[in-house]
Structure formats: C-alpha cells, structure tokens
Length: 150
Image (cartoon, rainbow, N blue to C red; front, side):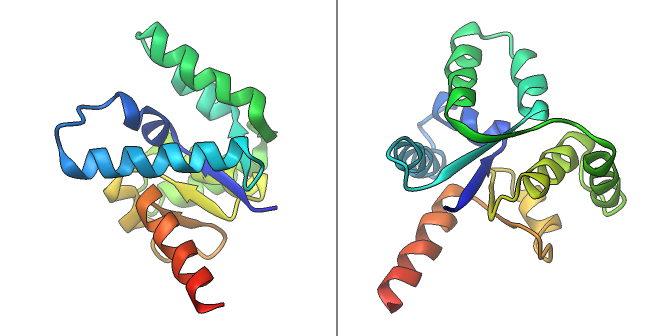
C-alpha cells in the first residue's frame, strides 16, 4: 500500500479562496486523494507536527475537519531524534523548520509521496530521493501517466 503524507497547507487548501483557478484545481485533486484514502486505495501517514500546526489554527471548523483525518491514518509519527536530525539536514538546505519537520516525518513514516501546495518547498526538495515532494495535481498526473503506460 502506498503511503501519502499531506502537509498542513495541503489539508487547508479547500478552505482557501477558491476564486483562483490553481487553488480550485489543487482543491479538487486533494479531495480526490482524500476520497481515495477513505476507499483504501492509499494509506495516510500522520505526524505530531501535523497535530502541532493544526492545533494552532484559530478556526475551530478547519481545525476539527483536519483533525478528523488523524483517525484514518495508518501510521502516526512522533518526533524523535531521527526525525529531528533529518529535519536539521533539510533546514541546512534552506527549508523552513516546520516544513523540514513535516518532510522528515513523512520519510520516517515510510511515505512514498509528500503532498504540499508550497511551491518553494517543492523546489527545495526537488532532488530528495527518499520521498517524492509534489502538489496534489502532479501526484494525480504522475499516477495517471503510469497507469496509461501499463
């Protein structure tokens, strides 16, 4: 089963201003991925970092909607010296500290894909071989192209 890690900006995408086309497309892709997780097509990886960022959200509706996904996660990664060490490696490459902790948690969880809508993070993690960092649209496109080739 393929493990997928969605960062907090990805989880928040449906709550963003949908008047922008890219945001609407990313939202639809993210909702499709979530439905696939519900159906057991993919497994969700969760982390203490998601909990930490989500609890800081002042919007209770958003916070509760995102927190509900924790119960569907197949793996839940706590912070550990290994996660912190990986995060320091990414931070040394210019990745923001919280983003670095998310990516490190995804790797620790064994996630194949790390989904985000943060373009700067995608650029900085382009060469990372332990997890594929992409936005939800590229994730769907990549898997569709792989299916088309088979």
